[in-house]
Image: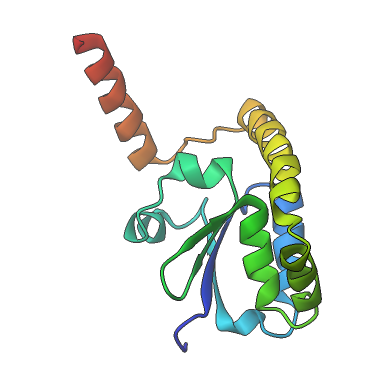
Length: 142
């Protein structure tokens, strides 16, 4: 695989998220992106310095220069690499609508995380369990 123009981190355990990402992956230009299902690839998360908890809380895209784009900004970055959606990314950026869209996305993301955490474990990986146990031990010592 060639060096990706961006790396997309998504929650493959969320049916809605997975359907949307599957749609983008079928678009022209998607082959230039690296797609990481955060529920399946703890190694890639740690390689990129992204915690599972942060990845579950918001959509993340890392561009080729290493800059992070999260939430609606992440979607705008993703769309900018897909010719069928490039116009939308440009429109949102030109009219400075990304901030507004990000506020709406943040509300959705909180709802999605609460719903997902109530129906399944958001922190089910062994690495996340060890981190949580360690932070609980540190809190009880303080």
